Length: 457
Ligand code: HAM
Image (cartoon, rainbow, N blue to C red; front, top):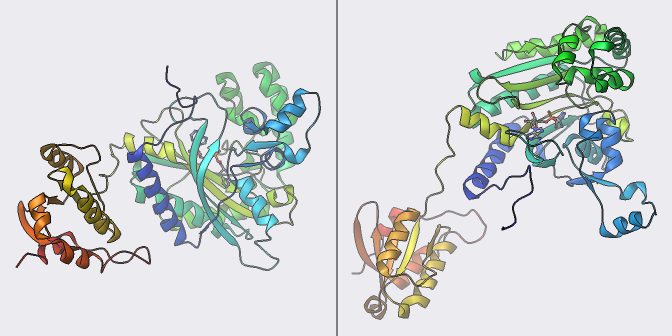
């Protein structure tokens, strides 16, 4: 059997790959209006970054990371040796840790500087059990803002994410925005103790894993999928009853900004998110219909301690990521289709093989002018070349035969207007040479002008 893509991965075939490009462009445009600039970080980092940044007790780090190892180091390990910490690498399960590492490494927020706003897009890797909406390699678009702790940063982040979803076509009515505050170093320890005490009192109703969670990181039990644990945690102490005054004020301000922007949200005191770095604001956007259990299309929050965790100076941060594949499922659930594929401008058809070299040269002139098109590369008959041109949706077909070549002309058929005219090859090439070329993105000729302006006298 032919080899298949690994389990939990998905090929983006041309139609979808084009949509992914469009999706990223819309995100760059929408988030760019809020001052976010692109950053690219490696798809693998030192394992230690994720352990320290995301948290050892999280499922993402303890169960789902793909570790990468060079052949040389693998050999060392097999021979009973060890590898240095900096050679222990993992594929990124998310983008925040790497971006914060880069901000610290390159000192992108010098003391007293304005916050840095960064946007990224690319594949993330988590060894989860694949199912609809849950892959082992999936694509995220994310943003991170470092250097400001004001609630306005959190609010504008959430607002721009909702604006993006609307722009890309996900109906706002089909989404729910959940918000919560996770507190800070001042108020969370007491809250964590309260949750632990509650869990200890209900230990006989909890799964073994939650019993362990109670010892290491009790808040993770809010994410447990076991129905018995979920029933217990439903009545656990609520963080919102334990917030300190500063965290409460921060949370209230975020909510006021959201309401002011006309966003409806649901407060969910059980929303703790699966990553340990969050402080204060956390939020998630879920699709309410047609998505099954993997219905979170985006989420994020504030992480005021993460920069220090990875060795930097105190730098507050806020960010979110959205899952591309889940957005596609949300669009499908809303009845949207991928936009029509790019139009084909021209096709050059050869009457026989003797004209192929000149046809090739005409095709190149069209392309150098910035137009999109092709010719036959398989020796097809003229009839099937026209079929192919029709299938491609070519607006113009340039037909070249030996007689025309002798006259130095080519017949151009306007497929939409069902008209044709003979034009001089030299004049056509001369006309096309005024367009496209350098710099990339220079004006492209209008198809009707190509057809209309040139005619044999
Ligand atoms: P996350 O909630 O783990 O947050 O992931 C963000 C989004 O990625 C999810 O809402 C979901 O749409 C998508 N996603 C996650 N796992 C999968 C998967 N296995 N298959 C398909 N899609 C998936 C983060 O990653 C944080 N880094 C967000 C953040 C940025 N927080 C602060 N800054």
